[in-house]
Length: 322
Image 1 (spheres, rainbow, N blue to C red):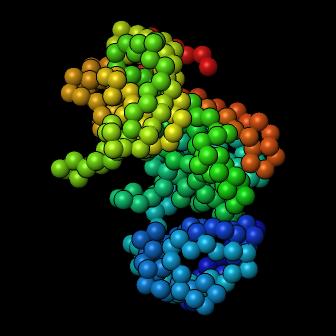
Image 2: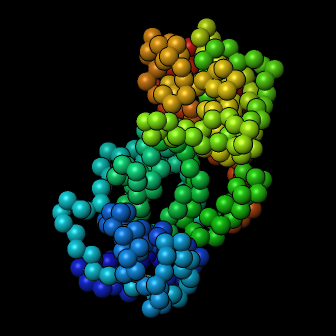
Image 3: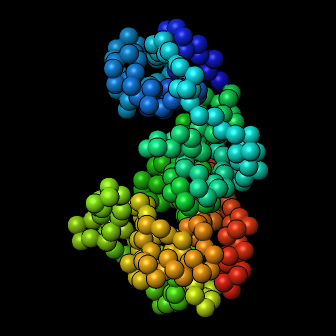
């Protein structure tokens, strides 16, 4: 059931429905205040202007069926209006739907599109989808993909679906993710897995990166060589754990950085990419296998690489069959 249109010029009381039961307050507000900037939503929560059942609440407070949320007046200057997805982007996303039912939506996310706004990004995939589906009060990302990674990503249309899938992710069972990665050099067929702990570091520039470090979190990626050309290898990568940049760092740690990886490739690899016309991170989320969180049906969803990446694979003599 859709939430009513919110008049931001006055105090509004919104009753939480069963669809949003158990949702975080910040995500609930973002779903009902679709045209309000995320920064403003968090500001009114922080200042205590948002009340749940007449009491103050934090961003991570869980709302439940029947709760009443008080939203204060929001005076938006024209320049404060939340960024809106262009018709071109909405059309692209509509054509990129891999699977959809009452509980789930699977999208072949384009390269270069962040999954959500924030940190200098005014508009992400989830904001665009909420614009595409104005009658849906609940749309939440099940998992994440880096901005520069293309491929399949799941969005829950029901709270029960989100909870079920996230339990599978936390327990590291039930969901199998398979990626295609174009790597520099000739990946040894004998390397079929990498187990190396990862830790977050910050460069002097302020850029955050992940590095292999004994004090890091346990991380495990399976690899399988699919084909190799003169300068690059195409591999299937399956992350067993789900650390940030895991596939990118594990491949680089072995000496075979992903083509187009501005964050982890070295100068020589950068020059090779320039010669070969590589203009993007060559990492694509190809396939997801999981039991449907509502019906239990075995699901296998696949999103083929776009033309740019497919042509690059062909150019470099790298093919695949999965």
